[in-house]
Amino acid sequence: MRGLLDGAPSSVVTVGVDLLAQALDDQAVAVDRVDWRPPLGGDAVAGHLSAVLADARRDAANRTALDRLLGAEAELVDVVPASEALGLQRGTFLHAGPPITWERASGPLRGALMGAMVLEGLASSPEDAESRLADANGVTLDPCHHHHAVGPMAGVVSPSMWGFVLRDPVHGGMAFCTLNEGLGKVLRYGAYGPEVIERLQWMARVLGPLLQQAVRRRVDTTGPVDVRSIIAQMLQMGDEGHNRNRAGTMMLVRELVPELLELGAPSGDVSDVVRFCNGNDHFFLNLVMPACKLALDAARDVPGSTMVVAMARNGTDFGIQVSGTGSQWFTAPANTPDGLFLGDFGPDDANPDIGDSAITETGGIGGFAMAAAPAIVRFVGGEADDAIATTRRMYDITLGEHPAYQVPVLGFRGTPTGIDVTAVVRTGVLPVINTGMAGRVAGTGQVGAGLVSPPEACFTQALDALAARAR
Image (cartoon, rainbow, N blue to C red; front, side):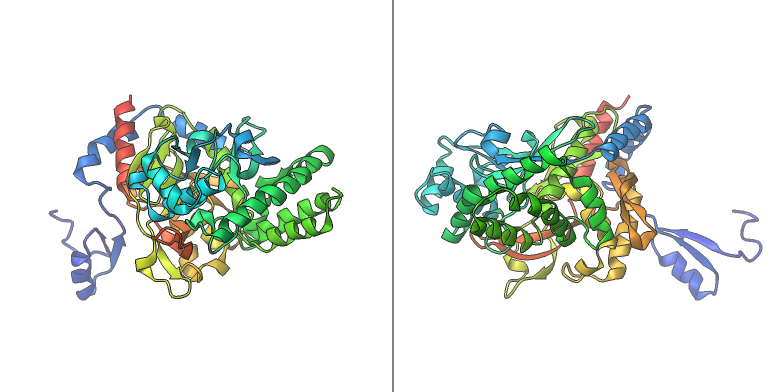
């Protein structure tokens, strides 16, 4: 230090606690503050972080995983029941997030399972369904992610539910997601009343079969709908692909209406289908999610890669999966979103974070593309400047930028894509997720929407596993 402070410094760089910087400010000394914080987990993970960063495979492995993610495409090729697309058997129910049992299931997940039991004719009433699910006799629960599928909110999929089938022609993958039911009292938010069951029955009787004919006709005549292209366009039109899908929904309707009109189906059924799809601004979300699932599945299983390939929540636990650690889940208790509430609902009514829809953030849109959607920020409790700052902050924890998904207000810069476990742990910056909120009590439905982050323990656990595999 001798000689360093003999003369008056032009400025002083400070790191960490602001006490020294403030003291220098008070003495009219110029200060450059560095925004630094200790790694997540503190000293306990420092050794593991060093081991993973020194893994000679990491850079090349992450380039491979990211190239696969960015190169994946997504085509809408069919609409079929889950029993046909996934081979789902009677009594088997898929759900969002990492594995969970009925005993630990949250209210909205329990409500969605009770409704699905009634829909499948396995129970005579929600109360009967609850009793049978508690006994677990003849009922199997398994995550959507284990079956190349994704489910919004509770994400419950039963054999008779119809859904979209998407294909990645580059890597050959397939992904499935059920048809979106709309907002309010719907099964994915844990509601199971008669109107919920009647809507699902109409979707299986009319909506699914007509969409199937329209999509198949489109494939046979002009080729499949290019879902990735629509996602790229919707970001230019004010959607971010998770909580706002208005432009994407309109573009999908424009693609399918000509085919629907050519089917020769009863005009009343066609108008009902068009009115239902066009009147639900979230209808396209159930195509965005499997499109992101396709891209991230292509990036799985690259030894040495520290890139996150899934973030998902079941309403009790938040879980992530990483390319270099196979199908292993790293879980911790889910946080509760912070945002705005519908009607008289308040924070005490909200369930902890739930749904596979965080696949959009994992794929580089949703909360990561908030700057592209200024119209949504007030709905989730923020300002336009907050949205821009959020997207910019996500570049600190990602491996690259998406060449197709761009943000106009940032000079058409590509969205931050490819979450790096080491960057999250090193910077302490957690991914931002833009999500809906389900009611804590089964049967309530949606109570609001907001922002939430994963628990940091998911990333420190993943780092431990990566360190054990590091060479």
